Length: 362
Image 1 (cartoon, rainbow, N blue to C red):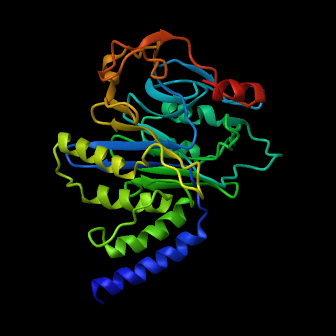
Image 2: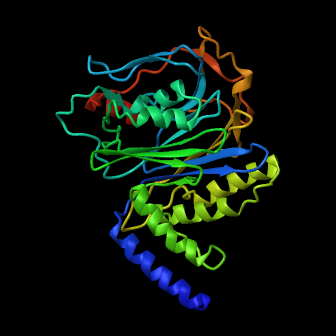
């Protein structure tokens, strides 16, 4: 079969599958590159239709956390320190811990977590990522515990009113990844080095099925170019597969920034039929070998980074915050001198109209 026919057939099949998937304007992209010489790098974009104020925190070991503000909860004390990005200073969106474990939360429309009468303790989405970062050094450790399915997810609405329907990507310093989803109320976990890419809808099994057609076509012949979740998944999957495994650390980092830039959605775009298109607000790249976390705002020309090895992560050390939202100058480079000691943020357990109005006004 010639390339044109093969491409046409694959494209038709993909269109049929993609048409059946829900269209969404919200999205994010997460990619993990696994190279030689212990190079493992995870990149991510945060895309949303309304502004999400985001700050960075470095948490030392010994943080006492509670998954919910009632008796129906679990408590833990963090074993590992971490650097995290928060949204609205009410919950952790993603982060990397001192063992090189990275957790990213991405939007998954249509997620259904549990029945109303579920007796298990609650885990607020505001602390779900923290639970994994605080307690586990590897993906395998996290998956072993999560598979026990001992809690239900509590997902209070976001300040704009949207449901906090999320799925989770985990990767460790060996490149082992896991995708954690709740599909029709049931926990599903995919674990392995092959799970390098995550976007949004549809759920992961369906997403992989759609991508199999693009994989057959080959990215040098045709790649989908829209901001739809399935298209970003295809582009990211192709490009991460062709970065040479023996790339130098410098080239691998540059390659990851290139992939997430390729999947980013330009800021300010709008269509008459879709006036509220989610655009990329920030990008992160986690260098899991070097324990360095790179962060770049879309509206800033500078990339900033946090090297966890430079921070005191011992129990009792202060929590450190980088206030990106209220920065008085352009931030660029190593941020070790810009972090300030603070108290921790208050996790969100339920959204009230008053709180939503305050947060949306910030």
